[in-house]
Image (tube, rainbow, N blue to C red; front, top):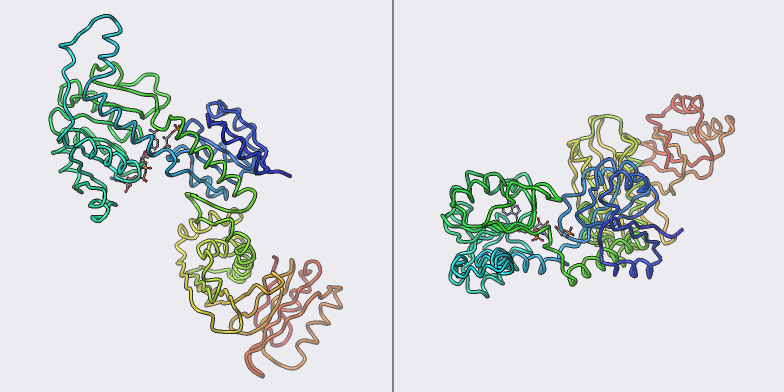
Length: 528
Ligand SMILES: NC(=O)C1=CN([C@@H]2O[C@H](COP(=O)(O)OP(=O)(O)OC[C@H]3O[C@@H](n4cnc5c(N)ncnc54)[C@H](O)[C@@H]3O)[C@@H](O)[C@H]2O)C=CC1
Ligand SMILES: O=C(O)C(=O)COP(=O)(O)O
């Protein structure tokens, strides 16, 4: 069946053609994002959801999204998506990080010029027939200092345009390297320095606990008298009430905001001030940007749903369409090995070491590690998946050690897992054979080759004559049919293992019987 995607925001219709070309069924309901109840009622029918900022992807929406595999944000900010809740459900969240950055930077520059020359107020007055030539005295921007808070994609474009307008640009961004600052022609400064020196301040950070109210009352008080402030990033980066007070007192000469703490903003403490310019979250609203982000998000969603390729995901490593088919058998292998190890572990886990030997090391090992972790945690937790597993493991304090090295043994690619728990260390290795099927190739350092089967019995025992006969007859007498039987031992008379695939489950009584066989050290019924 063709995957189904819902577009619940005002995306460019350009997206529709892409979905259709890619064999994805698409339902275009651009106003639905604003109707939480209706969205919750129908989201269960879709594999993909394409949004902008009006759709709020809340835990409640996600609870109903039984088939949802991907949320694609046609734009940058994903603060309207509950990422941890989506991750916990195995839903990939992707955005389009560059498609609207130029447009948003241009909006910030437009607002800066509009502030410098009071264009909106002058326009209103002129069209009202007042011709107030003496009322609108502006400021020149040439030679003025622009302080950029957050110098990432958009901040850097704003800086570039401002330099072209002959401004001096200083930037506060803890993650901006000195080299990048030099390349883009900005002076990297501390926040206090920026506040003290800037004639104009423009904000371009995401909303995080560190950036919320970054222009607080206290920081606004440290700005230069007559400063002008532009916010085209997120509402709440500036304390709105404190800014209103600073506008009222005249300390701040003007402000231009595209974003507000509460959106849609139909009333706001900033509204009505003569030196305030407001736009309704128009930063990304140009034909060019909307076409870019719509096409890109549709391509990304379709690629994921039809080919397993992952691009620009916030909560999973990228996987190209070329990598996806190569990766798939190893994802299965990693999950099965993880599951085997998880079923063998029933006491506190301390550390998981995953080793990639040979060609597999050149694939996306992060994705494989996530698959191994999901397999490992699933026997202990029901609600874990490849997307959520790394976060779940981290929450539980499990140390993950990933090693990549050259092939040493008989396999072009070997994947090994070692679990260190309070009960000791359990390790196993596996490989993908030429038939594309994953197999376990050694357990606890003992070689034994076996395909994974839905129902298996693992036994570790002392290598003594008679064990195999007794074990097989016990199963035979109980009517349990053996499908495959893999054996191995470390040395004659040493430790031995058996991994047996059986048809159907193992009756409890039979299982107890196996444990009581002479020489048996450990036995487990495994499900794959
Ligand atoms: N008004 C609108 O319609 C639009 C708004 N945006 C918003 O613009 C903002 C910036 O977007 P991009 O430049 O693409 O993001 P980006 O991720 O490329 O850049 C953000 C920058 O902020 C910096 N940063 C993070 N924490 C910081 C902190 N505590 N102090 C100072 N700097 C910090 C980062 O190091 C990074 O360089 C986002 O909030 C995005 O949602 C984006 C597009 C349209
Ligand atoms: O891309 C972003 O972060 C934006 O804020 C743009 O929002 P919009 O798609 O115009 O609702």
